Structures are given as C-alpha cells and as structure tokens.
Image (cartoon, rainbow, N blue to C red; front, side, top):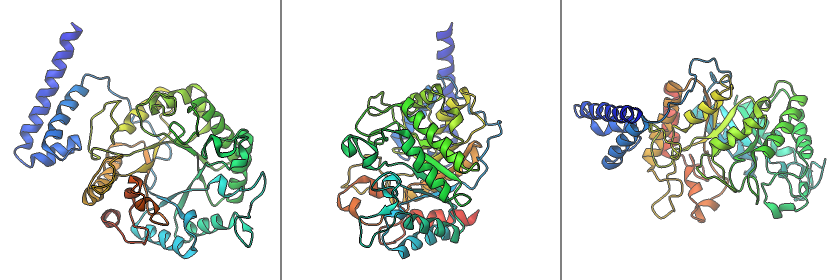
Length: 415
C-alpha cells in the first residue's frame, strides 16, 4: 500500500510540475523554470523539474517559520573584508567608505590570534617590524573606521599562533591550541579591549572541514570544548556580547578531514553546544545553480541548504535562534581557471547576489545577516596564481568595482 501511495505522490508531483511548465509556456518559459530550479539552460531546467518531483517523496523539513526568532529581524547586508592585510591605513578607509556608500551595514573581519598575541603568551607587541609597535594598533584602526562609517563589526576569532601548540605549525596553521584556556585568555583580552564597541564575535571558522582544524581529523566534540571556553570567557568580559558559532561549510563527506555539516551540527548539539552560541552560522554558496534553486537534496549543495540546517536546529529545540550566513556568493572565474566552486559570468554573479538577498528576506523569517564573500584582497596574488578564490571578489585589488558592486548598490538604495 505504501509503495502505491509513493508512486501516486510521485506521479502527482510530475503532473503539478508539468502543469507549471505548461503555464510557463504562456510566458517566458526559461525565466519561469529558473525561478524553480535556479538553472538557466534547457536541459538542466528539465532535470531540475524531475529533481523537484523526486523531492516530493522525501520527508519535508520543519523550519518553524512561525516561531519568534531573536536576531533575525536585523539589517541583512554584510560584507567580508580583509582589512588587516592592507598595510596602508588610507586603503583600509577607502574599502570601508566604498562598502558604506554601497549601503552595507556589517563588516565581517577576522582578528587573527596569530597576528595579535604573536610571540608568546600575554605578549601583544609586534616585533616583526622595526620599530616595534603594538599589535593592537591595526585593529584599533579597524574598529575606529567601522564606527566612523556607522558600520557594525562581526569579529571572527581564530588562527592560533605557533607558540600555542607543542608541534607549532607542523600540525597546521589553523589547528586548535593545545590548551583551550590559552584561547580563552585571548578571547577575553579582545572582548575586554573593545567592550561596548564590538558586540558580535564568531568563534572559529569552518571547523568541519580541512584545513580549518589543522592536519588532523575534524572533531565536533573538541570544537564544542573550544566554543564553550571562548563563549564563557567572552561573556565574562562583556555580558552583552553575542556569540556566533564557527560557520559550517556545506559538504557531503563523512570524514576524517571533512565532515558533512548536518552530522557535525547534530554532534555539536549532542556534545552540549546549545548553551554556548546565540547564532548558528553556515556558509551559503550557490555553486552550480542560482539562488532560486528550490531542490532539497541532502547530497546536493545549493542555496536552499539553510533549510536543512534550520530543520536540525528545530529538532534540537533551538528554533528561537537565527541562522546567519557567513559567506555567500557565486564564482565568476574566467574560462582558463579551474571552476572548483562553479562558474558564472560577471552578469550572473551580479544578478544572483541580489536575488539571494531577496529570497532570504521573502522566504526565511529565521535568517539574519548574509555576508557577501568578499569585498577585495590587498594584492593580486590569488589572480596571479590562477586561484578560483580570487573571483568571488566585488572589487579588484586596485579598487575597480565589478558589476556585482554596482548591482548590489543599486538594489540596496532602491529599498
């Protein structure tokens, strides 16, 4: 009986989708199918329709859209920046000014532990240059710039210095410290220094994939220990801080170096993470399809993936917390660059970015900030090395705006 019901549901789904396709024929079929599949070519669109029909056979996710969610009704417009890499303070300000002029509200900026407590425990002097200077100097300037242009900072705390591990950087430059209390002391120092000026702190980044946990298997339980220490020390330094967990990277691997984000998150909850973060962070890349792709397949990474993450939160009694996207964009790599992260044209990148914000605002009441990845790099090293990471940029290293900058600026100012 159940088999007959399943077949009936599948056939009904096909008929519904066929009807939608037939209706679309009365207008612009390509645009209509793109609105469902996120695909712009005919054959991928047809496959997308069959995938949508097959999705009707899977259990529906529960995103608890009617549950009041804290920190979701905020300005959603965030930007990832690498301001600490700009040697010239004037170029730091030029970046912040352009971001503010476009209408963005948030700067997601890393405060790397290895660049602040550089040479040893409790040592905040930078002796890598002459004359010796305070390692805080650069970060004080970044905080002041955010305040000057009325922007809020999301500060990512990660990247331990070599001295925090007995093996130094031999176990990986991103590997966690041997003693989590050393990390806790660093977090306390940062939060204490900027108390009342920075409120949002993210503890680590992508702890579920290589190389963000070093040259070793990722470990949700060990990450929760680090999150607990960081969270408790931050709250001790400033009770008003908001803690964001390390952004989970979407993947379907089962370890040891990369672990599926759904499994990693559930193991975080099992390890008691619920008390140690206020916002669930994840990455929101669209990769090979556009932001309107509504297919829900656990083993396919697309822009609908936040709905799966939200479902896991709901099942663990965490529906009152929001999801924030730490990194979102589509890769506009040239034809001679490996399309490791998918490939779109500059025109598509500009269009997709706007649609991504529009969809989240319209459909996901539990979604808060979406941080575009990324504004610019300080130099063209990534481009010269033909790294696809370079082509997520919004502005070239010499400050030339790309179409996505103008598109987002126009969209924001139209709201």
